[in-house]
Image (cartoon, rainbow, N blue to C red):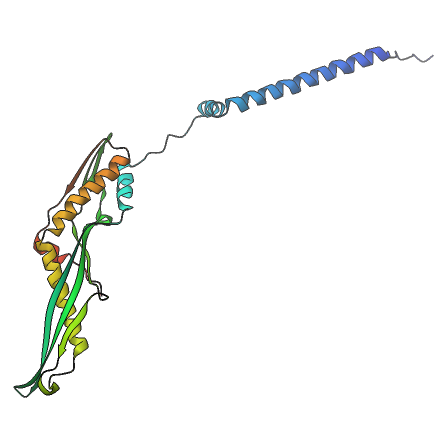
Length: 239
């Protein structure tokens, strides 16, 4: 005779399934609670995890380079402008051998402008010292940034080739010569009238305000003095 296998009761199966579903629900609920806890903790959980596995050291910031970049963003700092009118005569002779047979004269009235300031692109790391909230910076010396003749306002006041127009017809050449001489005259006047001193003082003020706004409590700005000769040598001419 074959042995009869015991039959599970319907109630027993149902109870077993309920237990299994209850365990699965508990695990799901526990997982959800963990996710909610992580979501609420946010960065703290990430930070704790990072502390557990170890974090890389924080990046180092070169404060001197930051200061230099802030100042260089201003590029060429124009802090003073000088304008002037110059009356310049120019002339050229017409000769036959060693004899002058005629002279052409030109009188040019020029309006010129000279800009002075500091070329901040020349600033170097060794020119900046930072200690806490204190910064000491040495700026490049002031210089003439550019000078030019305002041709829209300038004019040839008089052009004369002399008796019988025997002088050479060289108006364009004489005008160019007069413009060049006028520019030199205006540059010299600007330097003699202390344009670089004015540019120096204003550059200190502007850079001090810039660094103070950046958060430094004490700002010391130093600049090298510039002579008249250096002033003239630093000029750049715009045609």
